[in-house]
Length: 272
Image 1: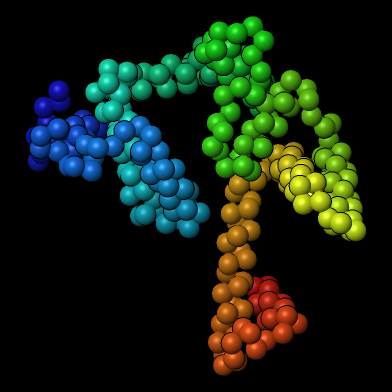
Image 2 (image 1 turned 180 degrees about the vertical axis):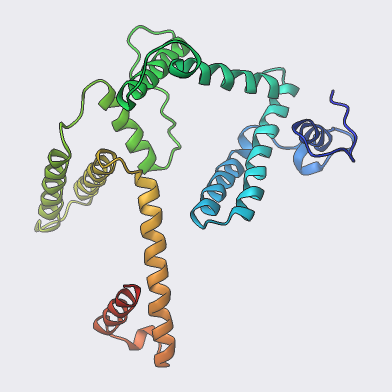
């Protein structure tokens, strides 16, 4: 049990002590006491996205706070693990220290890895060994242990990255672009069918999206980040359209699509 003075300076030990007090069965917070591993996962995801949002907004005052919230999630899980004698904060730290040292032999040992390609290959090989040891199987799929609850774009990118590591990948980015063009035509064919098969159309659109994620990966871009930026850009421009609608003193319903498109183009021109 940590023995920390409540007036002591901020430290990881103080944060762990606060967590232990929140979880105290007799004097703790009722909300914190009733939580378990599963019940706080949604909060963890939310906190991670709030960290990303603060970074994208260049709001470093908020980032400081959000990183604290995210760290608290790790402390919370560690407290639950300690109570159930599964693990604790010290073993969590020991685990990541061991992993980082093992995955960076070019930094912490005499291994000669000088290029990004060599470093990336070593990293993926170490991760493959970890998956093999974890499952203790001879023919373990390289796609094993990819989280099923990842955002779909991130999951697609991770699947493609794993396959690329064993050589199952397009040779160059133009081959990927050609695949996108092929998928676009297949979507178009489904849309032009006399009787649209919604299931087939959905599958073709999904294939197109998967191919676009592949293009992002080959361009060394993160699809999740790119789509968030596209969302932000659209939102900003639409706010400009809304402003012009308000200035016209007419509702959206009183505007034709051509008029709204004209507003949109004016907003785009103002950005240049």
